[in-house]
Length: 257
Length: 257
Image 1 (tube, one colour):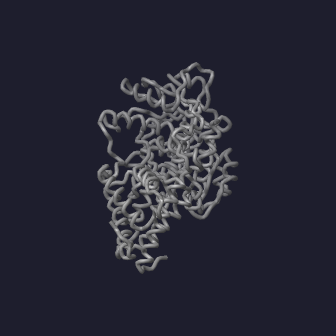
Image 2 (image 1 turned 90 degrees about the vertical axis):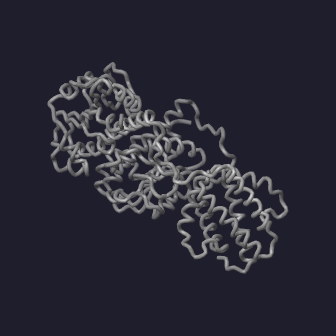
Image 3 (image 1 turned 60 degrees about the horizontal axis):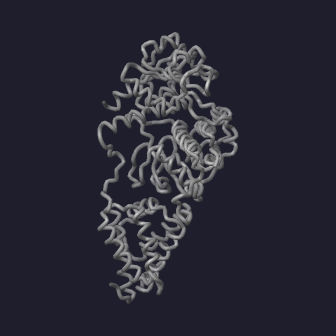
Protein backbone atom coordinates (compact mmCIF):
# COMPACT_ATOMS: atom_id res chain seq x y z
CA UNK A 1 0.00 0.00 0.00
CA UNK A 2 1.33 3.45 -0.85
CA UNK A 3 1.00 6.47 1.43
CA UNK A 4 -1.47 7.89 -1.07
CA UNK A 5 -3.69 4.83 -0.86
CA UNK A 6 -3.82 5.28 2.91
CA UNK A 7 -4.60 8.96 2.53
CA UNK A 8 -7.53 8.28 0.25
CA UNK A 9 -9.27 6.78 3.23
CA UNK A 10 -10.00 9.67 5.59
CA UNK A 11 -12.87 12.04 4.98
CA UNK A 12 -12.94 15.49 6.57
CA UNK A 13 -16.49 16.59 7.41
CA UNK A 14 -17.17 20.24 8.35
CA UNK A 15 -20.60 20.81 9.88
CA UNK A 16 -22.40 24.14 9.33
CA UNK A 17 -19.25 26.15 8.84
CA UNK A 18 -20.05 29.85 9.27
CA UNK A 19 -17.18 31.56 7.44
CA UNK A 20 -16.29 30.54 3.88
CA UNK A 21 -12.70 31.65 4.54
CA UNK A 22 -12.42 28.80 7.04
CA UNK A 23 -13.59 26.32 4.39
CA UNK A 24 -10.79 27.57 2.14
CA UNK A 25 -8.17 27.35 4.92
CA UNK A 26 -9.35 23.85 5.77
CA UNK A 27 -9.07 22.80 2.09
CA UNK A 28 -5.47 24.05 2.12
CA UNK A 29 -4.76 22.13 5.34
CA UNK A 30 -6.12 18.91 3.76
CA UNK A 31 -4.07 19.27 0.63
CA UNK A 32 -0.80 19.99 2.46
CA UNK A 33 -1.30 16.67 4.23
CA UNK A 34 -2.06 14.81 1.00
CA UNK A 35 -5.82 14.59 1.64
CA UNK A 36 -8.63 15.61 -0.67
CA UNK A 37 -11.99 14.22 0.55
CA UNK A 38 -13.79 17.29 1.95
CA UNK A 39 -17.48 17.08 2.79
CA UNK A 40 -19.53 20.08 3.90
CA UNK A 41 -22.73 19.71 5.90
CA UNK A 42 -25.15 22.59 5.31
CA UNK A 43 -22.43 25.26 5.12
CA UNK A 44 -23.50 28.83 5.88
CA UNK A 45 -21.00 30.13 3.30
CA UNK A 46 -20.40 28.62 -0.12
CA UNK A 47 -17.09 26.93 -0.96
CA UNK A 48 -17.19 29.03 -4.14
CA UNK A 49 -17.19 32.30 -2.11
CA UNK A 50 -14.20 34.53 -2.89
CA UNK A 51 -12.98 34.31 0.74
CA UNK A 52 -12.88 30.53 0.46
CA UNK A 53 -10.91 30.69 -2.79
CA UNK A 54 -8.52 33.29 -1.36
CA UNK A 55 -7.74 31.21 1.74
CA UNK A 56 -7.42 27.95 -0.20
CA UNK A 57 -4.34 29.32 -1.98
CA UNK A 58 -3.47 26.52 -4.43
CA UNK A 59 -5.95 24.04 -2.96
CA UNK A 60 -8.89 25.16 -5.12
CA UNK A 61 -9.13 21.63 -6.55
CA UNK A 62 -10.05 20.37 -3.06
CA UNK A 63 -12.68 23.13 -2.75
CA UNK A 64 -14.07 22.39 -6.21
CA UNK A 65 -14.37 18.69 -5.33
CA UNK A 66 -16.04 19.31 -1.95
CA UNK A 67 -19.41 17.58 -1.65
CA UNK A 68 -22.30 19.26 0.15
CA UNK A 69 -24.95 17.30 2.08
CA UNK A 70 -27.84 18.30 4.32
CA UNK A 71 -27.02 16.44 7.53
CA UNK A 72 -24.11 15.02 9.48
CA UNK A 73 -25.87 11.64 9.48
CA UNK A 74 -25.84 11.64 5.68
CA UNK A 75 -22.16 12.65 5.65
CA UNK A 76 -21.06 9.58 7.58
CA UNK A 77 -23.76 7.06 6.60
CA UNK A 78 -21.28 4.79 4.75
CA UNK A 79 -18.49 5.09 7.33
CA UNK A 80 -16.92 2.25 9.30
CA UNK A 81 -15.47 4.63 11.90
CA UNK A 82 -16.16 8.27 12.78
CA UNK A 83 -14.22 10.47 15.21
CA UNK A 84 -15.69 13.81 16.33
CA UNK A 85 -13.44 16.70 17.31
CA UNK A 86 -14.52 18.34 20.59
CA UNK A 87 -13.04 21.20 22.59
CA UNK A 88 -13.47 19.39 25.86
CA UNK A 89 -14.92 16.22 27.28
CA UNK A 90 -18.68 16.38 26.85
CA UNK A 91 -21.53 14.59 28.52
CA UNK A 92 -21.68 11.97 25.80
CA UNK A 93 -20.00 8.83 27.06
CA UNK A 94 -17.75 8.21 24.08
CA UNK A 95 -14.19 6.95 24.33
CA UNK A 96 -11.89 9.99 24.39
CA UNK A 97 -8.88 9.91 22.10
CA UNK A 98 -5.87 12.15 21.66
CA UNK A 99 -5.24 13.27 18.06
CA UNK A 100 -2.45 10.69 17.83
CA UNK A 101 -4.64 7.86 19.10
CA UNK A 102 -7.45 8.96 16.77
CA UNK A 103 -5.12 8.88 13.76
CA UNK A 104 -4.02 5.35 14.63
CA UNK A 105 -7.61 4.16 15.00
CA UNK A 106 -8.79 5.86 11.81
CA UNK A 107 -5.94 4.31 9.90
CA UNK A 108 -6.63 0.84 11.31
CA UNK A 109 -10.37 1.12 10.63
CA UNK A 110 -9.81 2.40 7.09
CA UNK A 111 -9.17 -1.24 6.13
CA UNK A 112 -12.90 -1.87 6.65
CA UNK A 113 -14.43 1.11 4.84
CA UNK A 114 -14.54 4.89 4.73
CA UNK A 115 -13.48 6.68 7.92
CA UNK A 116 -14.23 10.28 8.84
CA UNK A 117 -13.23 13.15 11.11
CA UNK A 118 -16.13 15.42 12.08
CA UNK A 119 -15.71 19.12 12.95
CA UNK A 120 -18.55 21.27 14.31
CA UNK A 121 -19.38 24.88 13.58
CA UNK A 122 -16.90 27.56 14.70
CA UNK A 123 -18.96 29.00 17.51
CA UNK A 124 -20.49 25.99 19.21
CA UNK A 125 -18.66 22.88 17.99
CA UNK A 126 -20.43 19.56 17.49
CA UNK A 127 -23.88 19.16 19.03
CA UNK A 128 -24.64 16.16 21.22
CA UNK A 129 -26.76 14.73 18.39
CA UNK A 130 -23.78 14.99 16.01
CA UNK A 131 -21.46 13.41 18.60
CA UNK A 132 -23.85 10.49 18.83
CA UNK A 133 -22.92 9.64 15.24
CA UNK A 134 -19.32 9.17 16.35
CA UNK A 135 -17.43 6.15 17.66
CA UNK A 136 -14.97 8.32 19.57
CA UNK A 137 -14.35 11.93 20.57
CA UNK A 138 -11.00 13.52 19.75
CA UNK A 139 -9.67 16.24 21.98
CA UNK A 140 -6.68 18.40 21.04
CA UNK A 141 -4.86 18.93 24.37
CA UNK A 142 -5.17 22.72 24.32
CA UNK A 143 -4.54 25.37 26.95
CA UNK A 144 -7.36 24.92 29.46
CA UNK A 145 -7.88 28.68 29.81
CA UNK A 146 -7.78 29.35 26.03
CA UNK A 147 -8.62 26.26 24.02
CA UNK A 148 -10.11 28.11 21.10
CA UNK A 149 -8.27 26.74 18.06
CA UNK A 150 -9.27 28.21 14.73
CA UNK A 151 -11.28 25.60 12.78
CA UNK A 152 -8.64 25.24 10.06
CA UNK A 153 -5.91 24.97 12.71
CA UNK A 154 -7.75 22.06 14.32
CA UNK A 155 -8.18 20.45 10.88
CA UNK A 156 -4.44 20.96 10.26
CA UNK A 157 -3.44 19.24 13.52
CA UNK A 158 -5.69 16.22 12.93
CA UNK A 159 -4.68 15.86 9.27
CA UNK A 160 -1.03 16.16 10.30
CA UNK A 161 -1.41 13.31 12.80
CA UNK A 162 -3.14 11.21 10.14
CA UNK A 163 -0.30 11.79 7.69
CA UNK A 164 2.40 10.99 10.26
CA UNK A 165 0.57 7.74 11.13
CA UNK A 166 0.09 6.85 7.44
CA UNK A 167 3.75 7.54 6.61
CA UNK A 168 4.92 5.53 9.63
CA UNK A 169 2.87 2.57 8.49
CA UNK A 170 4.36 2.77 5.02
CA UNK A 171 7.87 3.08 6.50
CA UNK A 172 7.26 0.05 8.71
CA UNK A 173 6.30 -1.88 5.59
CA UNK A 174 3.05 -2.99 7.16
CA UNK A 175 0.94 -2.21 4.16
CA UNK A 176 -2.67 -2.93 4.81
CA UNK A 177 -2.03 -5.57 7.41
CA UNK A 178 -5.24 -7.41 8.09
CA UNK A 179 -3.84 -9.64 10.83
CA UNK A 180 -6.36 -9.79 13.61
CA UNK A 181 -9.05 -8.35 11.40
CA UNK A 182 -12.55 -9.65 11.99
CA UNK A 183 -14.14 -11.79 9.34
CA UNK A 184 -17.24 -9.65 8.85
CA UNK A 185 -17.14 -5.96 7.95
CA UNK A 186 -18.20 -3.52 10.68
CA UNK A 187 -21.74 -2.25 10.39
CA UNK A 188 -22.08 1.03 8.51
CA UNK A 189 -23.38 4.06 10.35
CA UNK A 190 -26.68 3.74 8.43
CA UNK A 191 -27.05 0.16 9.69
CA UNK A 192 -26.30 1.37 13.21
CA UNK A 193 -29.06 3.97 12.90
CA UNK A 194 -31.38 1.14 11.85
CA UNK A 195 -30.40 -0.75 15.00
CA UNK A 196 -31.01 2.29 17.22
CA UNK A 197 -34.46 2.94 15.71
CA UNK A 198 -35.37 -0.73 16.21
CA UNK A 199 -34.03 -0.62 19.78
CA UNK A 200 -36.05 2.53 20.57
CA UNK A 201 -39.30 1.04 19.29
CA UNK A 202 -38.63 -2.21 21.18
CA UNK A 203 -38.05 -0.35 24.46
CA UNK A 204 -41.44 1.30 23.94
CA UNK A 205 -43.05 -2.04 23.11
CA UNK A 206 -41.78 -3.80 26.24
CA UNK A 207 -42.67 -0.75 28.39
CA UNK A 208 -39.10 -0.21 29.48
CA UNK A 209 -39.45 3.53 30.11
CA UNK A 210 -42.57 3.36 32.31
CA UNK A 211 -43.28 7.02 31.72
CA UNK A 212 -39.70 8.26 32.10
CA UNK A 213 -37.96 10.15 29.30
CA UNK A 214 -36.30 7.74 26.84
CA UNK A 215 -33.62 10.27 25.80
CA UNK A 216 -30.97 9.55 28.44
CA UNK A 217 -31.22 5.78 28.17
CA UNK A 218 -31.04 5.89 24.37
CA UNK A 219 -27.99 8.16 24.55
CA UNK A 220 -26.24 5.68 26.84
CA UNK A 221 -27.20 2.69 24.70
CA UNK A 222 -26.00 4.42 21.52
CA UNK A 223 -22.63 5.11 23.14
CA UNK A 224 -22.38 1.51 24.34
CA UNK A 225 -23.10 -0.04 20.94
CA UNK A 226 -20.98 2.49 19.02
CA UNK A 227 -18.10 1.51 21.29
CA UNK A 228 -18.64 -2.17 20.59
CA UNK A 229 -18.56 -1.60 16.81
CA UNK A 230 -20.72 -4.59 15.90
CA UNK A 231 -20.00 -6.29 12.60
CA UNK A 232 -22.76 -7.05 10.10
CA UNK A 233 -23.44 -10.52 11.54
CA UNK A 234 -23.58 -9.31 15.13
CA UNK A 235 -26.01 -6.64 14.02
CA UNK A 236 -28.29 -9.30 12.53
CA UNK A 237 -28.26 -11.19 15.84
CA UNK A 238 -29.13 -8.04 17.81
CA UNK A 239 -31.98 -7.19 15.44
CA UNK A 240 -33.25 -10.76 15.64
CA UNK A 241 -33.42 -10.47 19.42
CA UNK A 242 -35.29 -7.17 19.16
CA UNK A 243 -37.77 -8.67 16.68
CA UNK A 244 -38.50 -11.57 19.05
CA UNK A 245 -38.92 -9.23 22.04
CA UNK A 246 -41.44 -7.24 19.98
CA UNK A 247 -43.22 -10.47 19.03
CA UNK A 248 -43.59 -11.31 22.73
CA UNK A 249 -44.92 -7.82 23.46
CA UNK A 250 -47.48 -8.28 20.70
CA UNK A 251 -48.53 -11.67 22.08
CA UNK A 252 -48.82 -10.00 25.49
CA UNK A 253 -51.38 -7.66 23.95
CA UNK A 254 -49.23 -4.53 23.74
CA UNK A 255 -49.28 -2.17 20.82
CA UNK A 256 -46.03 -2.47 18.81
CA UNK A 257 -45.09 0.09 16.16
CA UNK B 1 7.70 20.74 37.00
CA UNK B 2 4.26 21.91 35.92
CA UNK B 3 3.16 21.96 32.28
CA UNK B 4 3.25 25.75 32.40
CA UNK B 5 6.84 25.83 33.58
CA UNK B 6 7.82 23.70 30.59
CA UNK B 7 5.81 25.88 28.26
CA UNK B 8 7.51 29.06 29.41
CA UNK B 9 10.69 27.79 27.79
CA UNK B 10 10.00 27.83 24.04
CA UNK B 11 10.14 31.06 22.05
CA UNK B 12 8.42 31.40 18.69
CA UNK B 13 10.37 33.65 16.31
CA UNK B 14 8.72 34.89 13.09
CA UNK B 15 11.16 36.42 10.61
CA UNK B 16 10.03 39.26 8.30
CA UNK B 17 6.39 38.23 8.29
CA UNK B 18 4.62 39.91 5.37
CA UNK B 19 0.95 39.79 6.43
CA UNK B 20 -0.09 41.10 9.86
CA UNK B 21 -3.07 38.70 9.78
CA UNK B 22 -0.57 35.84 9.93
CA UNK B 23 1.03 37.36 13.03
CA UNK B 24 -2.40 37.42 14.67
CA UNK B 25 -3.17 33.81 13.65
CA UNK B 26 0.24 32.72 14.95
CA UNK B 27 -0.42 34.47 18.29
CA UNK B 28 -3.68 32.54 18.57
CA UNK B 29 -1.89 29.27 17.76
CA UNK B 30 0.68 29.96 20.52
CA UNK B 31 -1.92 30.73 23.12
CA UNK B 32 -4.05 27.66 22.36
CA UNK B 33 -0.96 25.57 23.09
CA UNK B 34 -0.22 27.43 26.34
CA UNK B 35 2.67 29.46 24.87
CA UNK B 36 3.16 33.23 24.97
CA UNK B 37 6.73 34.15 24.02
CA UNK B 38 6.38 35.62 20.51
CA UNK B 39 9.28 37.46 18.93
CA UNK B 40 9.04 39.27 15.60
CA UNK B 41 12.09 39.96 13.48
CA UNK B 42 11.65 43.07 11.29
CA UNK B 43 7.96 42.40 10.53
CA UNK B 44 6.58 43.98 7.36
CA UNK B 45 3.23 44.46 9.07
CA UNK B 46 2.75 45.65 12.63
CA UNK B 47 1.35 43.34 15.34
CA UNK B 48 -0.98 46.26 16.18
CA UNK B 49 -2.49 46.21 12.67
CA UNK B 50 -6.25 45.57 12.70
CA UNK B 51 -5.81 42.34 10.65
CA UNK B 52 -3.46 41.02 13.34
CA UNK B 53 -5.93 41.84 16.09
CA UNK B 54 -8.83 40.33 14.15
CA UNK B 55 -7.01 37.03 13.55
CA UNK B 56 -5.67 36.82 17.12
CA UNK B 57 -9.23 36.42 18.43
CA UNK B 58 -8.73 36.35 22.21
CA UNK B 59 -4.93 36.13 22.01
CA UNK B 60 -4.35 39.89 21.89
CA UNK B 61 -2.31 39.62 25.10
CA UNK B 62 0.25 37.51 23.19
CA UNK B 63 0.29 40.12 20.40
CA UNK B 64 0.64 42.97 22.87
CA UNK B 65 3.56 41.22 24.55
CA UNK B 66 5.36 40.39 21.28
CA UNK B 67 8.87 41.80 21.16
CA UNK B 68 10.28 43.21 17.93
CA UNK B 69 13.97 42.99 17.04
CA UNK B 70 15.97 43.88 13.95
CA UNK B 71 17.64 40.56 13.14
CA UNK B 72 17.22 36.82 13.57
CA UNK B 73 20.66 36.73 15.23
CA UNK B 74 19.44 39.13 17.90
CA UNK B 75 16.24 37.09 18.39
CA UNK B 76 18.10 33.93 19.35
CA UNK B 77 21.29 35.38 20.87
CA UNK B 78 20.53 34.05 24.36
CA UNK B 79 19.23 30.63 23.23
CA UNK B 80 20.64 27.25 24.17
CA UNK B 81 18.96 25.54 21.21
CA UNK B 82 17.29 26.82 18.02
CA UNK B 83 15.33 24.81 15.46
CA UNK B 84 14.49 26.36 12.09
CA UNK B 85 11.35 25.34 10.21
CA UNK B 86 11.99 24.60 6.52
CA UNK B 87 9.72 23.42 3.74
CA UNK B 88 12.31 20.92 2.52
CA UNK B 89 15.89 19.88 3.17
CA UNK B 90 18.14 22.75 2.19
CA UNK B 91 21.79 22.98 1.35
CA UNK B 92 22.69 23.85 4.91
CA UNK B 93 24.20 20.80 6.56
CA UNK B 94 22.04 20.74 9.64
CA UNK B 95 20.57 17.70 11.35
CA UNK B 96 17.03 17.24 10.01
CA UNK B 97 14.27 16.63 12.57
CA UNK B 98 10.59 15.75 12.34
CA UNK B 99 8.29 18.05 14.35
CA UNK B 100 8.03 15.35 17.02
CA UNK B 101 11.81 14.93 17.28
CA UNK B 102 12.25 18.70 17.36
CA UNK B 103 9.76 19.03 20.23
CA UNK B 104 11.63 16.38 22.22
CA UNK B 105 14.99 18.10 21.65
CA UNK B 106 13.65 21.57 22.44
CA UNK B 107 12.14 20.28 25.65
CA UNK B 108 15.34 18.51 26.67
CA UNK B 109 17.47 21.55 25.86
CA UNK B 110 15.14 23.92 27.72
CA UNK B 111 16.81 22.70 30.91
CA UNK B 112 19.92 24.58 29.78
CA UNK B 113 18.44 27.93 28.74
CA UNK B 114 15.93 29.53 26.36
CA UNK B 115 15.03 27.51 23.25
CA UNK B 116 13.44 28.81 20.06
CA UNK B 117 11.58 27.79 16.91
CA UNK B 118 12.36 29.99 13.91
CA UNK B 119 9.91 30.56 11.02
CA UNK B 120 10.85 32.42 7.82
CA UNK B 121 8.79 34.81 5.76
CA UNK B 122 5.69 33.46 3.99
CA UNK B 123 7.04 33.58 0.46
CA UNK B 124 10.62 32.37 0.74
CA UNK B 125 11.04 30.74 4.16
CA UNK B 126 14.29 30.99 6.13
CA UNK B 127 17.39 32.16 4.26
CA UNK B 128 20.59 30.16 4.46
CA UNK B 129 22.04 32.83 6.77
CA UNK B 130 19.10 32.44 9.13
CA UNK B 131 19.36 28.63 9.04
CA UNK B 132 22.99 28.95 10.06
CA UNK B 133 21.77 30.33 13.39
CA UNK B 134 19.97 27.03 14.00
CA UNK B 135 21.10 23.79 15.62
CA UNK B 136 18.65 21.73 13.58
CA UNK B 137 16.18 22.05 10.70
CA UNK B 138 12.57 20.92 11.27
CA UNK B 139 10.57 19.66 8.34
CA UNK B 140 6.80 19.08 8.50
CA UNK B 141 6.21 15.93 6.38
CA UNK B 142 3.87 17.59 3.89
CA UNK B 143 2.47 16.50 0.53
CA UNK B 144 5.49 16.59 -1.80
CA UNK B 145 3.44 18.16 -4.61
CA UNK B 146 1.77 20.76 -2.35
CA UNK B 147 3.79 21.44 0.77
CA UNK B 148 2.66 25.03 1.18
CA UNK B 149 1.40 25.24 4.77
CA UNK B 150 0.07 28.59 5.86
CA UNK B 151 2.57 30.20 8.28
CA UNK B 152 0.16 30.05 11.24
CA UNK B 153 -0.70 26.41 10.38
CA UNK B 154 3.00 25.49 10.56
CA UNK B 155 3.29 27.37 13.88
CA UNK B 156 0.21 25.46 15.13
CA UNK B 157 1.68 22.04 14.24
CA UNK B 158 5.04 22.77 15.91
CA UNK B 159 3.46 24.32 19.03
CA UNK B 160 1.10 21.33 19.23
CA UNK B 161 4.03 18.89 19.18
CA UNK B 162 5.77 20.95 21.88
CA UNK B 163 2.70 20.84 24.09
CA UNK B 164 2.18 17.09 23.63
CA UNK B 165 5.83 16.49 24.55
CA UNK B 166 5.60 18.83 27.57
CA UNK B 167 2.38 17.21 28.81
CA UNK B 168 3.86 13.73 28.36
CA UNK B 169 6.80 14.73 30.48
CA UNK B 170 4.51 16.07 33.18
CA UNK B 171 2.43 12.89 33.08
CA UNK B 172 5.54 10.72 33.31
CA UNK B 173 6.67 12.70 36.35
CA UNK B 174 3.33 12.98 38.09
CA UNK B 175 1.88 9.51 37.75
CA UNK B 176 -1.32 8.68 36.00
CA UNK B 177 -3.39 11.40 34.43
CA UNK B 178 -6.99 10.46 34.98
CA UNK B 179 -8.50 13.08 32.66
CA UNK B 180 -10.96 11.47 30.27
CA UNK B 181 -11.77 8.57 32.57
CA UNK B 182 -15.39 7.48 32.58
CA UNK B 183 -17.47 8.41 35.60
CA UNK B 184 -18.69 4.89 36.42
CA UNK B 185 -16.37 1.97 37.04
CA UNK B 186 -16.32 -0.78 34.41
CA UNK B 187 -18.42 -3.80 35.25
CA UNK B 188 -16.55 -6.58 36.99
CA UNK B 189 -16.22 -9.91 35.22
CA UNK B 190 -18.65 -11.41 37.77
CA UNK B 191 -21.21 -8.77 36.80
CA UNK B 192 -20.60 -9.58 33.14
CA UNK B 193 -21.28 -13.26 33.84
CA UNK B 194 -24.53 -12.21 35.49
CA UNK B 195 -25.44 -10.30 32.33
CA UNK B 196 -24.64 -13.28 30.09
CA UNK B 197 -26.71 -15.69 32.21
CA UNK B 198 -29.63 -13.24 32.15
CA UNK B 199 -29.21 -12.81 28.38
CA UNK B 200 -29.19 -16.58 27.81
CA UNK B 201 -32.38 -17.13 29.80
CA UNK B 202 -34.06 -14.21 28.02
CA UNK B 203 -33.20 -15.61 24.59
CA UNK B 204 -34.87 -18.86 25.67
CA UNK B 205 -37.88 -16.99 27.00
CA UNK B 206 -38.50 -15.03 23.80
CA UNK B 207 -37.91 -18.16 21.69
CA UNK B 208 -34.93 -16.67 19.88
CA UNK B 209 -33.22 -19.98 19.14
CA UNK B 210 -36.22 -21.75 17.61
CA UNK B 211 -34.61 -25.14 18.11
CA UNK B 212 -31.10 -24.15 16.98
CA UNK B 213 -28.11 -24.52 19.29
CA UNK B 214 -27.68 -21.43 21.45
CA UNK B 215 -23.91 -21.89 21.81
CA UNK B 216 -22.74 -19.98 18.72
CA UNK B 217 -25.02 -17.00 19.26
CA UNK B 218 -24.05 -16.72 22.92
CA UNK B 219 -20.37 -16.86 21.99
CA UNK B 220 -20.84 -13.97 19.56
CA UNK B 221 -22.88 -11.91 22.01
CA UNK B 222 -20.30 -12.43 24.75
CA UNK B 223 -17.56 -11.16 22.45
CA UNK B 224 -19.66 -8.14 21.47
CA UNK B 225 -20.42 -7.07 25.05
CA UNK B 226 -16.91 -7.80 26.32
CA UNK B 227 -15.61 -5.51 23.59
CA UNK B 228 -17.97 -2.73 24.66
CA UNK B 229 -16.76 -2.93 28.28
CA UNK B 230 -20.01 -1.67 29.83
CA UNK B 231 -19.76 0.31 33.04
CA UNK B 232 -21.92 -0.49 36.06
CA UNK B 233 -24.70 1.89 35.02
CA UNK B 234 -24.84 0.60 31.45
CA UNK B 235 -25.05 -2.92 32.84
CA UNK B 236 -28.08 -1.96 34.92
CA UNK B 237 -29.80 -0.60 31.78
CA UNK B 238 -29.10 -3.80 29.83
CA UNK B 239 -30.43 -5.97 32.65
CA UNK B 240 -33.52 -3.78 32.94
CA UNK B 241 -34.23 -4.35 29.25
CA UNK B 242 -33.82 -8.12 29.66
CA UNK B 243 -36.14 -8.12 32.68
CA UNK B 244 -38.84 -6.32 30.68
CA UNK B 245 -38.45 -8.67 27.70
CA UNK B 246 -38.92 -11.61 30.09
CA UNK B 247 -41.97 -9.93 31.59
CA UNK B 248 -43.49 -9.67 28.09
CA UNK B 249 -42.74 -13.35 27.43
CA UNK B 250 -44.46 -14.26 30.70
CA UNK B 251 -47.52 -12.16 29.75
CA UNK B 252 -47.47 -13.91 26.36
CA UNK B 253 -47.88 -17.19 28.23
CA UNK B 254 -44.36 -18.52 27.81
CA UNK B 255 -42.45 -20.30 30.51
CA UNK B 256 -39.65 -18.10 31.85
CA UNK B 257 -36.89 -19.52 34.05
